[in-house]
Length: 139
Image 1 (cartoon, rainbow, N blue to C red):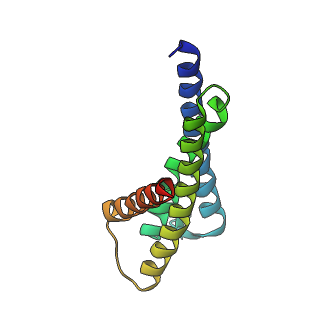
Image 2: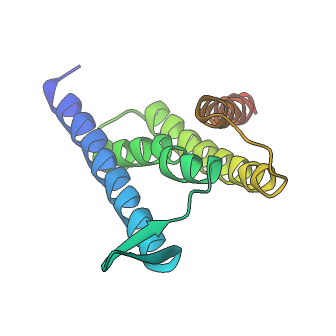
């Protein structure tokens, strides 16, 4: 394997990481703008954002595989093999499907006041993404 595909693949992962951090900053900005409360204490205004537990955890960390795979695909799609492109497309599909399905699960558990640990939230979501990936790959 030549050095050119490795550099482009690494660049794709870096692009995906930058997009992921942009996603997090956008989420935090939206949360502070629309879902926060101002308190005045001793003449000082404090802005407090509401904590949604597992919903926040999954929104922030659950989309990471999608961004990494999409960055890899778009930056190095022309230099990787056909099998690599197909794997990236399957990875993007399964990441997005798993993210959306597990997002509905986290919203449901939050509304039912079932507290989910950070590890359970992320572990369950990533396991679901892996199951969807292998199911699609098998078909």
